[in-house]
View 1 (cartoon, one colour):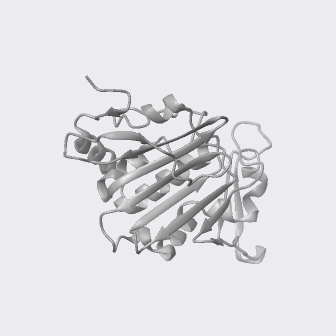
View 2 (view 1 turned 45 degrees about the vertical axis):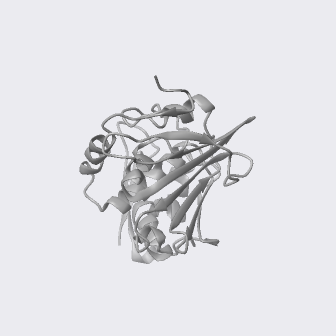
View 3 (view 1 turned 120 degrees about the vertical axis):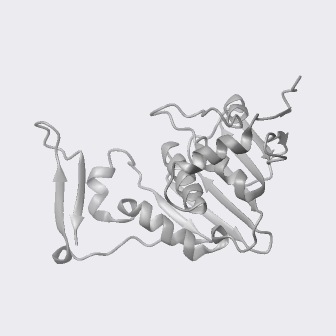
Length: 231
């Protein structure tokens, strides 16, 4: 019998490794992009990344919707996702599950309304990923979700602020380019800011003469469904 305060995910490593095999990039790149994508689904307007090489920790904080206690509990089921399509609640995808492969432990803290809870999660063996409720360590502000990975490798690229910025710019470039504001404004009305170790990532400045716009419209719609540029 597994108590509500401590449960185990069965065949944890095998399932998480299967998730990892679906991605062509490095494991660290996949972890970072999945976590950011889920933060975006939660309605965040700011994503903060904080590295601490001395403690080998990477902390990622969003100001999105956060999770209810039952949602955070289900988040630890390696075989399930608490995120329904169009109803993002933060770090509920595979990113943090993949993070178990490179971390000694993963602390998740979330705030939603009056709910303020936190858990600690780690791989004990190939078949056990125990977790337990812990007092919130104070990683989040008024709302949202924060996750702190204590990495097994102190030389992990996830502790390199330059690597984090380069990966975010490569995968989420339109969010940092004003040319996409009209299109993305329908989904991110207040925009999205990225902050890495206290420094906000600057938006790209590209002169119009250096690029040719491309718009894709479906059917007879006047508003583009997608757009891009040739530079």
